[in-house]
Image (cartoon, rainbow, N blue to C red):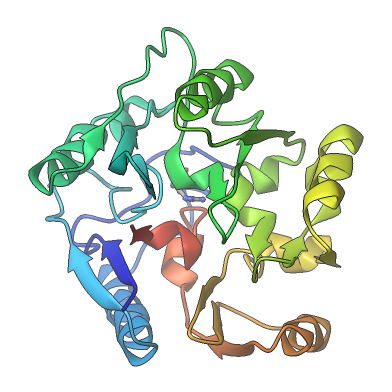
Length: 274
Ligand code: ARG
């Protein structure tokens, strides 16, 4: 049974502009946010997931985005590990110790990186190939090239290669908005989010790349959750539905409108635990 970590949106809000989606005019409806979050949890449960939660902390308006504070994994001979992030925004950096402690209390090996002036934002920018053979590392807006390099050095000790991918579209400031693995062979990719070099590397590692349009990517259709043959997504288009169908996946729609005001959707709100 897949286990997934989420954080209730008790203190969720949009108070500043960390990414281009966060406009001050779009006030958050917290009651609506709560029901959308509950609906996401129900859909995950219906798809066979066990849900674990971390306690929300007052004043941490983005803590609901549980994909960013730690990168987790498991490797034969090393066990479960967690790499605490170095978040760009100070308010988000304060979330990190809570997630690191959560992992420490569950016996994850904590791998601290010496970031200095580099940044790394967990599963927002670091995405496992589904078979665990490598990790894709996005950089350019939030994580830095140096952050991904330091992470790469740490992973190489466990024999896990990291593929660096430079991002260029501010609306795709995290890799999880423009790369979504569907299975070991296929991924959804929004090509406009990458340098030519990054796009060429992606083509090396996936047999089938299904291209999203800018419209789809900017509405978080590449920020879905793949589980149990479902693709949990805030919206779907006929072309996305056809691509999912080719890969044996069925779209399941969950409204995340309140969280989109903060620049996040389904994928950003959870971390699959090893
Ligand atoms: N407001 C949050 C931020 O800008 C959104 C994070 C979205 N997370 C993600 N994995 N894309 O930090």
